Image 1 (cartoon, rainbow, N blue to C red):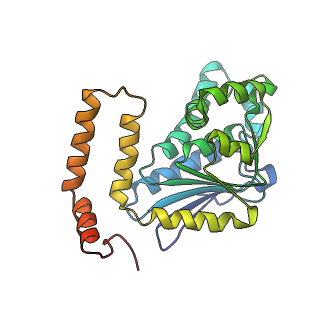
Image 2: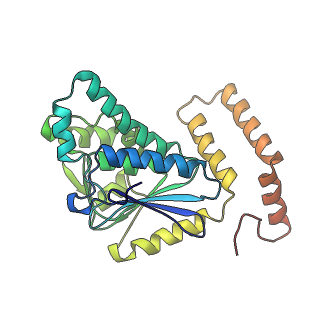
Length: 263
């Protein structure tokens, strides 16, 4: 893996940090960066020692979306080549969205176009108050197609109808209001806010966090019917019988730390 486009670090707590490292072009992603994020997420998702994944950008921007050279190349692609290229972008987003680890977007600066897809694919998004955003594809005759399932889920259909069709820029306060960001802080306090969130995440059982993600994917947007009730009853029964479930409840009753908490 080349640190020219992606820097991967894992600290002693098991917190992995992926830093898009193309600050000269505002961390716009090309084929190489897309491939490296996919490869990194595959490794991290499979690593039992990894507890959380943080995604951020080097320099003053989070991500400007697709870089211009990639867009120029895509303009000359055949229909089949364009579809394959879009599939690679979708695979990158799905590798984040379906991660069994908690994923945090640390939005250190502006995010445009596909950069919003990266934010929306993460479980948690913390942004600097200096950040701004735009789904500007329509202003160059395109649409935010591949990122749309993630962004619409984050900001709701109503907000998507405005920002997908206007391409207008909005600030961090608006991004929080519509659901793209969970928290907005002063730029100087961004890492402190991240540490606060990681502190909360690391208190939790890693297996139960993965199951909580699975639960959301299974239940979201399904009708509240007998099939859902049976499925969720089965999931909690299985969790209660698991080693982690037993340890967590026992530790709580005995007023001690569960074994997954490091000193």
